[in-house]
Image: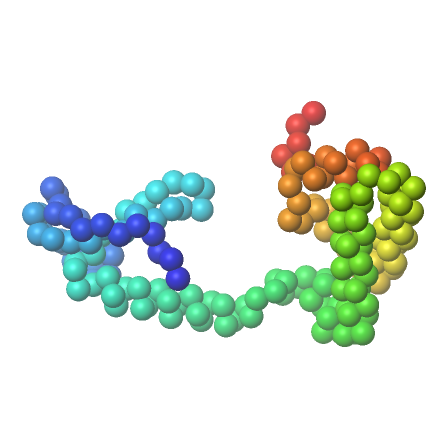
Length: 168
């Protein structure tokens, strides 16, 4: 588990220890942890030299509890997760169709033969229809594709797919 950059320094002013909530005296050795926030900013956490280890163990325990509650995968209330609980056969069929669709899209991206691309495009559109019959909800944002591959896919197939963050 990665927390951030760790440094050892002496404070010029009193800082609050993140673990024991006591002030760290000026010019005494302490540990400073630099972490990146979700929006790209940095923030600094200060610890007594003996407080870092218990704090990291506590954070690791809290994270394990959070992950145990969620158990990964789709969030609760998601139609895909509900489908998996209600009808495992349909969920397995949908997963197979989605994987086949992804494979055909990879073929389209790697091929230059217009006839094959046209054939695969028709198959993908047919698969999309079958997928939406099983579960009408489908994520519109193409996952794990670069903007360049999305642009190439729309150029080759004529689909109106705009890359993430596309501005006309």
